Structure formats: C-alpha cells, structure tokens
Amino acid sequence: MQLYQEILAAVLAKEEVQITFPNLNINLTEMIESESYQALQKIKTVITDDSLTDSECFMKIEEIINIFETLGSGGGTRHDFG
Image (cartoon, rainbow, N blue to C red; front, top):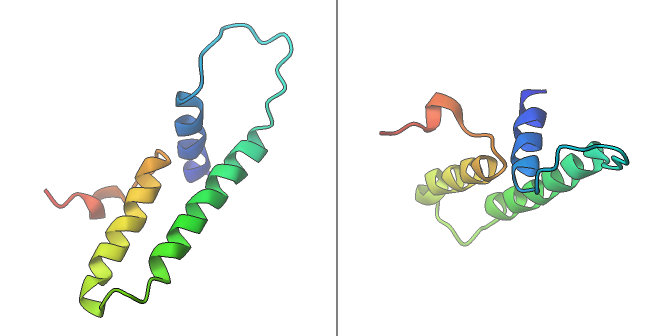
C-alpha cells in the first residue's frame, strides 16, 4: 500500500490543483495502473537488455531504482550510497 501511495502522490503532484470537487470523475485506480504498467515496461527493458555484461548488473539495478524514484518511491536506505 505504501508504494501505491507514493505513486499516487507523484501522479497528483503533476496535476493542477483546484480546491473544488463538485464533479470529481477521476479514476485513481486507472491512473495508478497506467503509471505502474509504464514503470514495469521500463523495468522489463532494463532487465532484458542482454547487451550489458555481468559486471554492469549493478547499473541495471540502479536504473530500476531510478524508475521507482521517478514514480515518487525509492530504494530506501540501500540506495543511499553517499
């Protein structure tokens, strides 16, 4: 559920904010599923890239974490290499 909330927050952060809701017709499930599917497509592209050598696997994982960060999620403390 936390990933869902992180993705939802990132999606909504891109939208124009209005304070009225008289005819709210947003299907949040469809929005989240669309963003999630696009992220999964990007992740699949990363992990099926056979042009990279095994020594570049770390970079594959880094790329996947960056996809999650784009959605408003992240890799937690394991991605804090600083």
